[in-house]
Length: 215
Image (cartoon, rainbow, N blue to C red):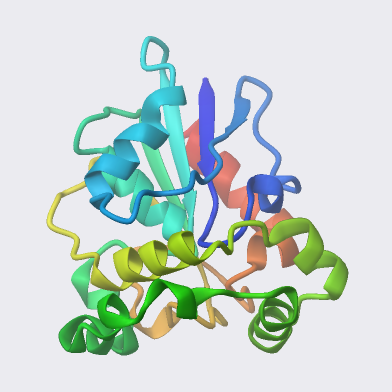
């Protein structure tokens, strides 16, 4: 069984390095690509899916924004299972600040040049919100170009789930700083897990992930 992993906004797939799969599974990483400023989410997702071997059974795993991406892929792919981690799957789980950004169109109107993120700013953000070390920022935070940042923030805050996903499983932490667990329904809950629990609590994530895959 091929298992394809897509990471969260700004971070590369090294965040999945502590994730272990059952013996019959092969791990594959799908890294982010630089989007075109005019890309729709559907256009971008179809390009990301080009590396997926649809001739063999496969599972999709999406972390954070990657969870939204794999749900969009289900509009034209038929994975055996879909697993989202630290993400959202319904309009009721969308944070209020995302809804505010969507209603005001504020992100769409911000000039691309203002999305320039230097190392110091990204380091401060990661340290404050996720308590990441400088070493972790250097290893995991890779995608911060202005075009990518503007496109991604707009897509994630404007996403509206309208498609019913089959075989969808959700793993979420009670201390998630982005998607409050209070809004999350029908999920495998990890006590004390924050938005980076794939790095902080890999044993807990691995246990649930294996159960889902092997069931």
